View 1: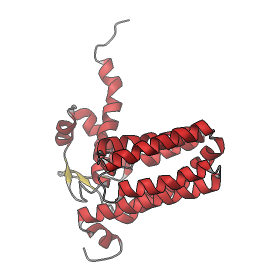
View 2: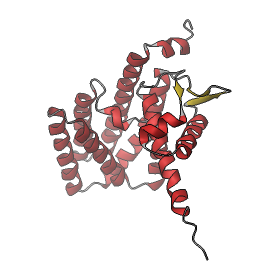
View 3: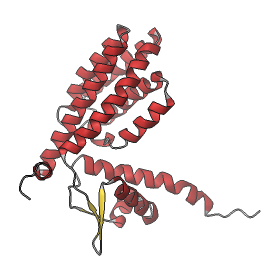
View 4: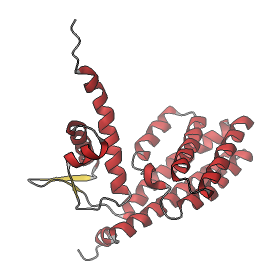
Length: 236
């Protein structure tokens, strides 16, 4: 059997297209790309140092998800999005993540709680040092640890679908997010230390609703509130 030398490229292509989709999705959710903005395949490919094929696949995926429109003879454009849409995504995520944390609290050992406390303390130091990259990474580790303790592959799968819409790479730069994260995580940790699953559920639910509000407000600042006004029946 002859091995086609192009096969490794084919195997890697979905990963590259996922990376490109995540990049563009984050640009849209953070308001860096506004509704109506043109999104060119070659521009995305150049920004990520990838070929145009995975970049094009990514934009097709985002069209299916409703983030992009394909306009005849004009190409891909950012679809209508409002701060209310962003809050809705976080509302659903809050419900699912709350269940996961309730299970995590019930499953956690003292060593698990100590590990979460250590991560949270490190996150606090990163916030005080204004180390954005470290802050984002530690926050990701903290939530990943919660999901691991929840021990539910199916719920984790659903969460994976929802969190793909969260612009992790811009989160720590959103005004108010580092401070609110520390406060919200304190409440989550308190639930673990008190072995109270329902308190954990409530704390995670409140945390994600709060995060959604901050991201929605940041989105409105970037787009001038125009999309919100349109979604509420305001002037075009």
